[in-house]
Image (cartoon, rainbow, N blue to C red; front, side):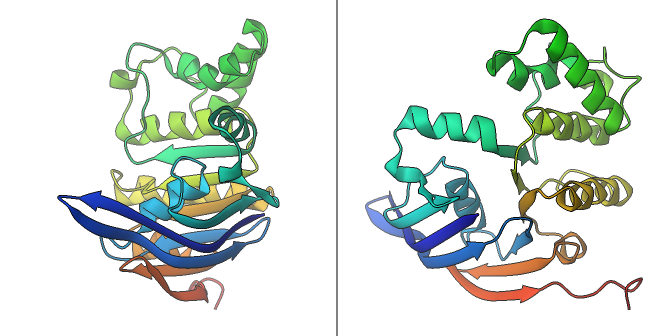
Length: 231
């Protein structure tokens, strides 16, 4: 499904070379749920956006279903992201002057769906995340947790097979964080492959697999610990 082969990413900052990823090799099979942990600056976000086709490596290859993503041109990568990959961010990235329903319609509009189909699909997805009665609310009229659920609904609009999440619970209280991770577990049970960056140890252990990064290197790759309920 997703793989990295000897990927290195370096940046030039203040006339110095900074290594974000250092010879990373990784295999993520279809249906996996992987959490990425590690200190700030360890390379987690660089690895995530590279898997999403948004940051080219300095060397090495990144593949989705056997296709080397960075051998594609910019337009081809954009089409791949639009059809196969859903993104969730800590900051939600909702458009403030659009309603919840209109925010969820955006990827459907970009995919060329007709207006009726856009509206029906958006309403269905908002109902799924418990916001069927908030279709006309703008982001400022929603709680932080509700805004994140709108972002989840928007991410699902084009039915992605891969979900990439960068600190999806970072701005949320514990109860809402639990709810959001529950949605990710549900999406994973449907067969979607998930890669999630998190600083939250409890959230990390809800994944099937935990990868730890330090100084741009993958220093640990293990199955998550069983929950108390499973013990």
